[in-house]
Amino acid sequence: MHDTRVIVAATGGVAALAAGAVGVAINSPTFAVVAGSAGVVAAIAGVALGARARQSEYRLEQAEDEIRAVRRELASINAVLQEEASRRVAEEELGSSLEERARGEQAFDAATGLYDEKYFAVLAQQQVAAARRSLRPISVIIFEIDAMGDADRDTRLQALGVVGDVVRRTLRESDAACRLGDLMVGAILEDTPEAGAVWAAERVRGTLLASPVGDALTLSAGVACYPTHALGAAELVHQASRALDEARSRGRDRVELAPEPTS
Image 1 (tube, rainbow, N blue to C red):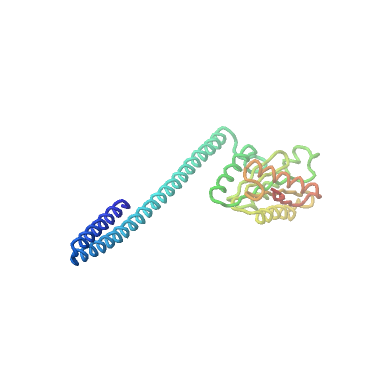
Image 2: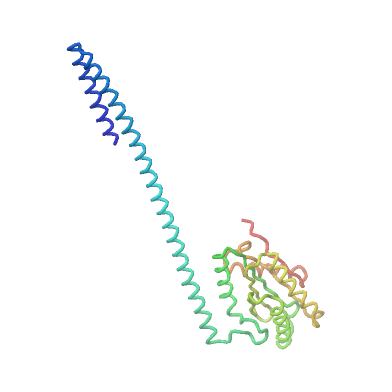
């Protein structure tokens, strides 16, 4: 387009120069007018072609911008589809693992009525993955019965049964709780930030204190929340365990929240 403008302008200029030269040679005003007219025509043609060229270039730039935007959008959609496919594969694998275990083994603990200990890690992983996709918090609470380490097995089982009943009656149906070892219970609270998890732990502790065995049976608890305290399931459980250790070191029968990471 730039070459066309140059050719038109040059042609007009040459024509005007030739007409002017002839006019001078023969001393004719007519040729002088022709020379001027040719120059004007050449200038007008050059301006018009320049305007068209700029408009065409602008439209071409717009089209290229739109193509780049479409490509970015397609890349974004492709990334979302790939993430969704990965999520479904992970969910199917976790679900299959849980179903296989449930078919071959007892899913619930007989003493507490809660999920068996072997499901806790799987449930925590599923809940953290779901929280990551939905950008919602989840919390883990680990309860431990205080001062029962020297009790006999039957006494520990009875105490666990009481605690399991309190946990089932106090937490929401959407929350998951598992027996952990001889004296501990782990709970996973979906869509629950730190304040809500501490409140839920205090409710469980308070309900136990208000029960007929409240004078003899108390609980300590540690709380950790995704994403505040950890981004992975294993680390989240670890942070809740550390908070439980802090609760026990401060005199037991209390709830402690995990500290926020310093970095």
